[in-house]
Image (cartoon, rainbow, N blue to C red; front, top):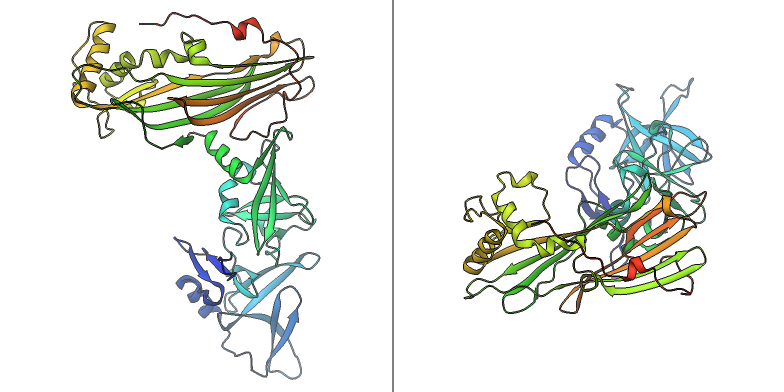
Length: 472
């Protein structure tokens, strides 16, 4: 890696618990590596008459050490590592790519893999030194190629790639291999979904350039791909900016996570959005927070028809079952407060004290009905202040068995309060004969589905208000 002034640095992690970043000209071996080198040292300087220097184009200098028997001039190869000559074994793998290891002359079965990087030899780390931190964070275990024997690959060359005997190229992360395709012109990696992660090689490092995902229905920048990786995991993404909603309520955080599925007749996504709200103590009467804003722009291509619909879905369908947790937040918070084991509680609303600690079951008086549950929670917030986590679960999906035509749909979500946008993301669904159905949630707007001109009105079942009664 390079700094802003163009100085080359090593990310030193071989045989270390904590990686160190050191300048190239100050690279230091670990204590364990130094001990190995000392043990393998043959005890001759490069100036010895028994040592002959041989230069190899791709691997620098190799030193041949000859026996002092003038009749039988046998020799073995060594390299200079940490200013000591140690024996090296080299095995050809593919063209000029070699598998190299240093070994102990006294115990020839004891050996360690090495690589030639940046003009010098070093121990080969468990993760390719040519991988940027950004690329490392993009790699998942599903990308590992478990069919390849790592012991039959070359060491990394000046390009940073390992090769097998057929010329296939690999990077290494934590001892596992990642296949690099089209490495000579436009290198990329495929994940388990078939997405293409395109790489750029610059200043001795591979970094993520962009990603073509879902059969090229989305094009993502590297930043969007890494953000989507979080969005579509248990980690999720957040807007942590604190916002004063009114004199009584603050919004502390807005968080979203999602997962998509194609199961049986259903293809869609489960989207969980959490609003963390803080109520300030001291008011003589309780005050409701402002309404959330759940703004959606839906565009759908259904056969020859392309329609679009836009609305704040909370105002449009306030009684939709999607929003029941918002309407029943106090009653649901009461149930959470009374739960003995908070870790296994799977409700959508949680209540905490001002220090974000769950309330004990005895914090609220026992309630005999819905009105008392609401009153007990509101009284606690009014007297002590506190925090509510209100999670909205949305399940935008399409039922495949009801389709007569191929269908593509994109929903653009813009979550807001007090007309201030908090989080934006998109969900896409693609269903076509002879192709796998696709559903995804992304932060990218570069989506190549449902892109035709609008020529029809939205269906009544989309535009009409839906009314559901909530449980008490």
